[in-house]
Length: 109
Image (cartoon, rainbow, N blue to C red; front, top):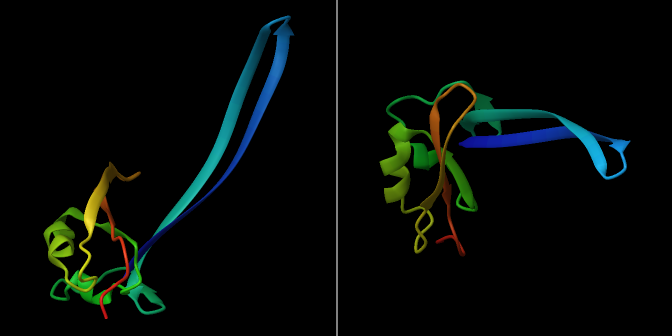
């Protein structure tokens, strides 16, 4: 299972310089973590021969996937009759590409 969480803290300051002229600045601190593991125990890696979808909960509605696991996530049937669909592709802070999938509806039993 892979999960992503982020938290943020921000501060915006605005100062009037002249009538009708304001200057402002925003400082934001964002911290994110990605955890990979099985059940409630996180680990740094998932064995290469283990199917990624096997570790995902049936109740998952959003799944973060690395490019090497993209096709496997698209073919996964654990959410039948729904299918996961890619909704966002981004590069993380390390420059690595990740794909966010969305699963809609009630999971298959």
